[in-house]
Amino acid sequence: WLLLVVAVIRCCGQGSFAPAPPRKDVQKFSLNIPRVTLEDLAKNQTLKSGLHAYVLHGFAEKWKAMDWTLDYLKEKIPFEWVDYYPKNMVDVQAKPYLLKFDKAVTEFQNPVQWKNGEPKYMQIRLGLRGWKRLKKDFTPKPLPDVFWDDDEWAGKCMKNQDGKVDKPAINNFFVTNQWKFLLIGEEGTSMFFHKDGTAASSWQVQIVGKKRWTLCPNSESHLLDVHLDTYKPDYSRFPQFASAKCGQVTVAPGELLYYPAYWWHHTLQVATPSIAYTGALVGVEADRDDLGSGQQRKPHYRFYQDLQEKCLKCWKKGVSERQCDDISVKWAGAAPPPFRAVCDDYLPKCLELWHEHSESLHGKAKHEL
Image 1 (cartoon, rainbow, N blue to C red):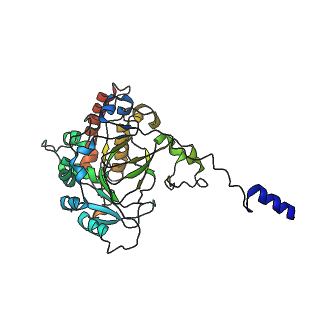
Image 2: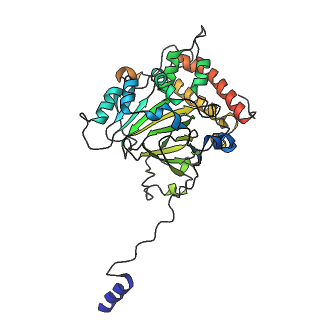
Image 3: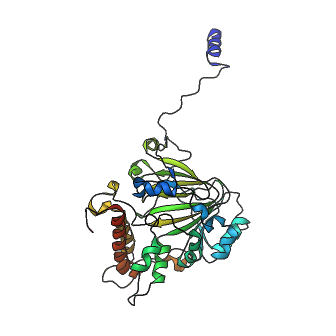
């Protein structure tokens, strides 16, 4: 026995054993998320297709939004509602408290009601009134055809019978679809891994602090799960994550991240505070093979279908009464149901504009709407 112990010590050190070899089946994050200038983007037809993620740098630094502070925003949009997470939003089951923005910022800066020592996170759903107060801080737009947003189409397809822009309807569209967001968090906060429920592509500009991103295309959905922490993957629970084609990137102040509709994303704030603005785009992507065939290949058509599915939960043909509850009556600040005029009258007109613009960017569509 003594000789065996001596042999082990000589072979492996002071009674220790060689460490287990590293796992080979781990996520490599091999998906390239390029950093490009505006000039690069203008010449890159692959990125202009809207089907790939990228970081645009060297442009947003000129926006007035880059001078934002929490106190400035508190003064500009005190009335907007906030989903306030005093214990982070890393858990898919996390529930927010609904606060007005001025109250939320005060609690964020100097906690009184929730003193738990955990990093805090806020999501602010901007309505039309709040957006009008902030939109001038995001001019000029980069490549208006590529970043073609609701400023260009909402006022054209959402009009009353008298021809006037239906501002309440546009506001309803914004808040029911979480169309425009301010995202504010402390270091360590993270929104759980997920993909959005509507087929709109997204762009987010980092204003203060830095943010880490994990991005995975919709085609990888069968390998992904909302309970997965992409920053500390548990491969015993989610071994299939190692096979997914994903990428990671850190976005700094003044940089703008774009990613296509239905892409999975997972964020991690790496500085306090982190302030970012995110907006949605529709009618800017080329046809996609991962969405199906025929009309289903068109992201803007899928977006229209996603919204109509929401509409059908509230409005039935031939029935005048709304079929869903308005939870904003019970919980002030919660998203209201979609207006019937938006569902029945405006969305079909908007779809025509989205299709028209997508066709102008990406050529004659093979399948007409």
